[in-house]
Image (cartoon, rainbow, N blue to C red; front, side, top):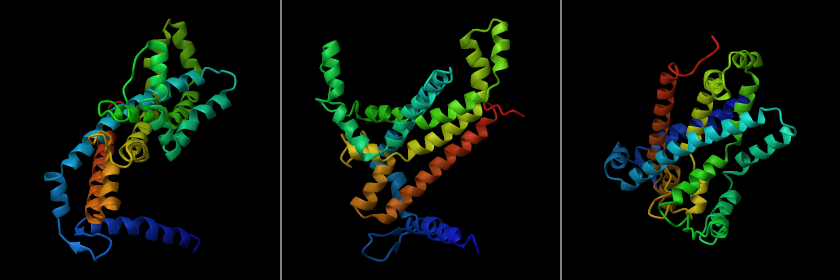
Length: 283
């Protein structure tokens, strides 16, 4: 009886919509008329006739490939710095975690668009200190995606907090023994810190990769919902949104969502299969 509210929520707001979206992925549905069963037509069109699907996949994979490793590396570096026992650790931890809370918000994306505009803060700094007339980072297809990568890396607070908790669990006597043996700080990092942190690296990698695949708000705000210029910021989630709520092709959008689910599931499965070769558990 106590689980009844939870079960109602699970079936009505989680499992129910999932099953219904799977059904819609085999239909043509525009919200105004009843769904029309088309079988595998939506999936066939996605895989064989949709150039925007390929463009969105390219942009999304580039974003995942660069933003996730850079974010994890930056988070680990800051966590190791904070683990040195500096004063005001709680304050610094809160300051560094703040971008993770705000990074995906509309306000921060709008601020990011202003900072990287042709007459924004970045170009003003480039001109003031180096005499360089910078490009319009947002409207130039060469640079638009990389501004989003920088914004993604800036949201390093969440993995940083987890790395910091992991660093606190490493026994200090291991470092003391390594120091007595003459191991340098760099060697201690490769031989002690990183191997013992591999379960946390693995966890952060999975979580951050899934989040990167689902990234939507920054691209939507910075490109005005269009994914431009020249589809350079057309994230997969943004393209899915366009199909669903700009063109009202709900059946096609549902098929796109299930393709994304399959891609993320494959990545996660491959990560777990390969983890036995590089993740070291304390067993």
